[in-house]
Structures are given as structure tokens and as C-alpha cells.
Length: 313
Length: 53
Image 1: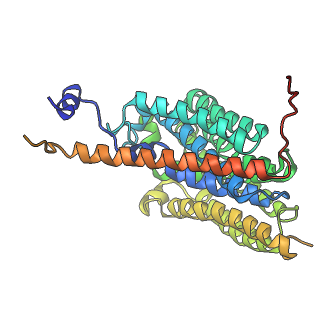
Image 2: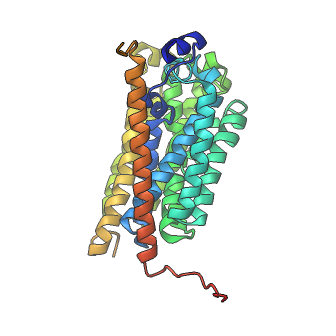
């Protein structure tokens, strides 16, 4: 008897390496890597490239581990929602126990290695981030409060702070501004998605704002958060991590973002249904560029600074 | 009698094993590089151990 026939008998899925990679939410990991790199480079202390590379790698692995644990916990609702039904566990490619084991093992490894490669504070912050995303957000708040996505934003906003702490070994106000940018950006980004992925969250019985407070309220919330984000993003330009390049990018992006949020607030479901949520879809697409370009501009300022070109000096 | 592959599962497992092997190899090299950087940096100090004879 071959090992193949044994597998067929037990009917356990035989996952490929790619399936495990998908389990780690690679798109979220890309965002984590990028924002952590910006946090690391924007810090006023330079880091040896190998230490920097290793630290970012372990932050990414920590983020991937929390993604795997999130998929393990949320497998039941992932199978109901169209957007997530093809994830490795609901698709039957990976066993839930495998996702749990992978998540726990990689969480431990990433925290331990970041403590060694970076410093204890950075490792502790990564551990807290994983705990916050998996336990506080996924297990507790996601299914109990319509403000769930606000807490999701908090979990996703830690990487630039961790990057900064890897370089400096201490806290400062600047990385928390980067934290605030992601934190304030996440709700309008996801609420726009919830508007045009109409029945997904209803079917999964996740108390998304669209389900509990209705769509007009969600549209109002998007506008409020976008106005607050506008003030925060422009204000960041005048801190030590900002500069003229960032200011120019922030003004253009925030005017466009605010225009989109206003358009979303200014229409109802009948109009949105008629054009298949065109404005909401455009706003969602813009939100992806919004965050990428803000952090890209912060990166440019940081890279130019040693040559006396970045910042306001 | 010669052994032959019976299923595409073998190919998938081979790919997975090679991937895991490469990752472990990369991890070892990374640890070596990190150790080298840490001990050759100015901040590194040997622990003060009293040698008893």
C-alpha cells in the first residue's frame, strides 16, 4: 500500500506550500512589510541592513501567523461570505488544526526572533499586536460590536511603530502618527467594501455597521472618518517625518478622498444600485492608493533627509 | 520491479519538501549573518565571566 492510498482513505487535504502561504494573508503582509519598512527608515537611528531585513521579515512572519490564526477562528464565517469562500480552510485545502498549529508556531518564532534581531520592546510589541488581532479583534470584538473594523484598524496599524522601535529601541510621537493614519484609514476603506459587497456580512451575521445601523449611517460614518483623516494626514506633514513632498501628496490624495466620501454620503441605495455601486468601488480603489502613496511619500522624505533634502529644514 | 509514481501528489509533496528545505536553509544563513553583524558591531560586549581555576 502506498502513502497515496493512505491519504485517500483518511480524506485529509494535501496542501501545497502555496496554500500555507495563502493562509498567511499575503496581501495584508505586503501592507505590513511596507509600513514597517517606512517606520524603520523614517526613524532617526540607522540600522544595519541585515538587522533591518531580518526584523522586517520577522514582523511579516508575525503578521502572517496572526492571519493564519484569524483564518482558523473565522473559518465558519469565511465559508459563508463570497469574498472569503476560496480561502484555504473553507476551500478544503488546509485543515483547521494545521492553520492553528502553523499560526501558533510562527507567532512564537517571530516574536522570539524579533527580540533577538531587534530588541525586547519590538518583540513585545509584535506579541501584543498578534494578541490584539487574534484575541481582542477576531475572537472577541469582530462578532460583538459594529465598530469591529475600528479595532481591526488598530491591529493593522502597529507595524510602522514596531519598525520604528526596532531602530530606536524606544517610543516617540512620530510612529504613533503613522499608526493613527492607518487606524483612521481602515474604517472608511472597509465600510466602502461592505457597501458594495452587499449581502456578505448579512449572510455571515457579522455585526458590520451596514447590518446594525443601516447603509445611510455607514455612509455618514465614512464621511466623518474621512474628514478626521484629512486633518490628521495634512497635520502629519508639519511634523519631523513630514515635508514638502509628503504635503503635496497628502493635499492631493485627501482632497480626492474627501470628494469620494462626500459623493458616497450624498447618494442613497437606489442611486447606488442603479450604477452597481460605482462611486463606492472607486472610493475603495482610491483608498488602496491613498495609504500606499502616503507611506511612499513618508519614505521619500526619510530617504532624502540624509542629503539635506527631506523635511522642512 | 521498478517503482513508479502513482499520483500527482508525489510532485506536490516534492515541491513542498523542497520549499521547506530552502526556507530552513535560508533561516540558518540569516541567523549566521545576524550573529556576525551583532558580534562585530561596536555595541557588542563579551559577558564578564570570572574564570575559576
